[in-house]
Amino acid sequence: MTVELSGSAALATEQDIVLARQHVRQLCQSLKFSLVDQTKMVTAASELARNTLIHGGGGQMRWNVREEGARRGLALHFEDKGPGIADLRLALSDGWSSGSGMGLGLPGSKRLVNEFDIETAPGQGTRVSIIKWK
Amino acid sequence: MNDTNQALLDALGAEESQLVESWHAALPLSAQTTGQSSRGEARQLLAGLRDGLRAGGAPEALDTPAWAPLRQSLEALSAARAAKGEKAGDTSLFVLALKKPMFDALQQRFAKDPAGLGAALWSATSLVDKVAQHTVTTFQSTREDIIRRQQQDLLELSTPVVKLWEGVLAVPMIGVLDSSRTQLVMESLLQSIVSSGSALAIIDITGVPTVDTLVAQHLLKTVTAIRLMGADCIISGIRPQIAQTIVHLGIDLQGITTKATLADALLVALQRSGWRVSRTD
Amino acid sequence: MERIPILRMGQTLLVTIQIDMQDQTAMALQEDLAAKIAETGANGVMIDISALEIVDSFVGRMLSSISGIARILSAVTVVVGMQPAVAITLVELGLSLPGVRTALNVERGMQLLDTVRREKFLDR
Image 1 (cartoon, rainbow over the protein chains, first blue to last red):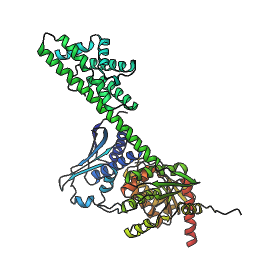
Image 2 (image 1 turned 180 degrees about the vertical axis):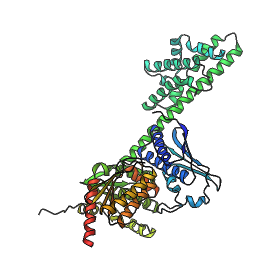
Image 3 (image 1 turned 45 degrees about the vertical axis):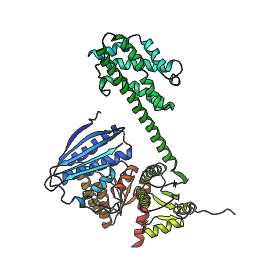
């Protein structure tokens, strides 16, 4: 099945999270990521998609393939127009062995990917972008 | 197609065997490979150049679809030479040598038109330069791929997973334990645990020079993953200095069994698996 | 919504998760297991996740919860068949699933259940 190299999908229901996982899996496979890298990327997508749905009130996942010189990567963007994250530093703080933080799973997801970027402000929604390079 | 490209096309089309011979002659002696292969490569490149020009490709923009067949021939050419161990310079020299025969052909065609000759020469030279550049880039990335693969092989060779006993695996770690090596060990060890059905893994760190908080973290990650899967782990090869460092840094080994030598660890592993070792005399 | 079937083998409840679950499916499994343990008086629960290619924090927490709930209801839980890529990812996520017993496969899982149950009975 051909997978478009860029696109977007709505994150409005729980089923959308499942679909998002499957879609990211297909994208990773077509980019020939290793099994462990696929698993990490799909898991990160699951965490962030759930955040968008539960904390952001719903939104969308956009994706595109990045090329930088000889390497290729998959970029995913999770966007919502929800309440935003008030204390970003708290949300991003987490020693490896502790499981605390605000329950957003952001530090964990960050460790699963190569690049992690977040834009958020109270009342301004949230956008989280992640990239995994092959 | 504009006049200049048409002129280039004509110059490249006329009397191909003569063009190929003058190209071959323009190569430095060392680059003139025996008999057919370099002539064959020359003919293929000429065909790619002609197809590109006919498809309306602009000499300044080699990445457009019109030049796809040419790019493919160039990549094959570069890759073959890189695999043979030739220097990057040789391949681009090969391409650049086309300039002389092209210029000669263009001069003949534009003998009465200096302005036209100027434009055509400029087009020809930019085209050949871009093509040469493309071969260098491709050459480099092929070499880098080879190096990367060799690095990967080296990494894998230095952390083999061995079966010590039924249900007992061992990984002798040699060298600095960084995050990429940890990833590799985790992947191959966990996979071996599944495929061999072994419930015990011994990680021997005799060959690891220093253990600091970061290295300890890597080790703990590996052990946690092993335990998550339902197997267990023993760490052996703990030198006295390392034991001191661990205590000094306050590293919590979270109940992992540690032994000074692989032999001690094997004994523990056997006992835990229900084996008894006794002498026959 | 699909509900994951729970099989019973003597004193042990068996669950095999073979689908990519929605969050509500996971929550329903948790409730169904709690109900079934209470209803049957089972003292062992085996959850086979060998077909799961993704275990994110939601599923991870569900496994921990089931383990805790079962313990309160006097049952032992074992999760078996975790795939290597899943284990590596969970560790990176920072989830070590404390309190959740694991085994390499169903066979070892049953052995572990028997061992732990025997110890528990001896305690009484």
